[in-house]
Length: 331
Ligand SMILES: [Mn+2]
Image (cartoon, rainbow, N blue to C red; front, side, top):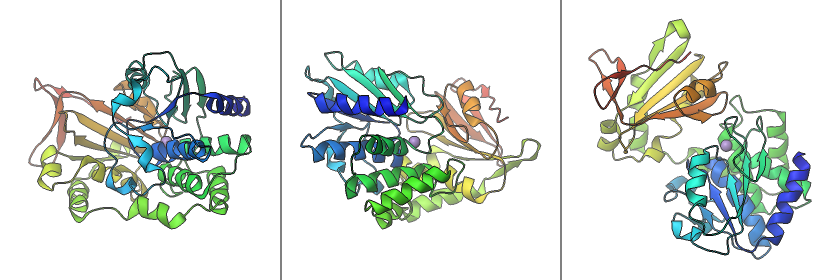
């Protein structure tokens, strides 16, 4: 079935009049790497496909090949000719619907993803739960259709796999992640560029904010979990963007020996975002209870209209706008 779908997607793209790609609302190495690898495949055939992203590209990704195809102008959807939409690394059907609804016609929606919480919203769903990254699914698209990826496409796909496996260190890493990555290196993927994109982009002020979060790590022995938090003030006082502090939970997952961790932070929109990682628990189930989603070992959710309250001893709680405490259960 997987191979059949890859061939079907290939035929669809080859006959498409005006395809558009959508990268997940969370801009990261995998959502961008997967969509740009596919955009490179199309560009190699003379078709420039716009890749819609929700906001401006974070600094660390501007060096990715084909990044010039990205646009955050919703105007790209106002085109009666659009007949195919391919969505990458996105499990949020409402987000996709809000964009596809802007298209005057009724395009075929292709859903390429690896999230366990993906509800198969597309007309064609290539959702491989257990794949280490969406970029890995895209690599199979190339392989099944006997397409040789360019160096640029290989670099994009390696970025995706490295990002989602935290450089082959987290629970998403398996033998096939390593196998495909070595093939990508053989196809000319520039590994130094990938490493630079992933690690060498933290500003000193972003690290200071990480430092505040590290200082506040709280152990919850009964459930073998650690939590920490960042308020809007921490982020604003240091003039860092939310993109710059992303990755904190991945870093903590790498260096702590507790089973489960949760990083809470106040967003610009007045919400509290929770990002969870676990070595043994299915945190996507916890995320679902709070209308979030993700993977078994890495998931998150957003509590809208909430803020963080911290007492003198550093204990935190989440309060709704009317001052009521919202209890978060991590087990
Ligand atoms: Mn992913």
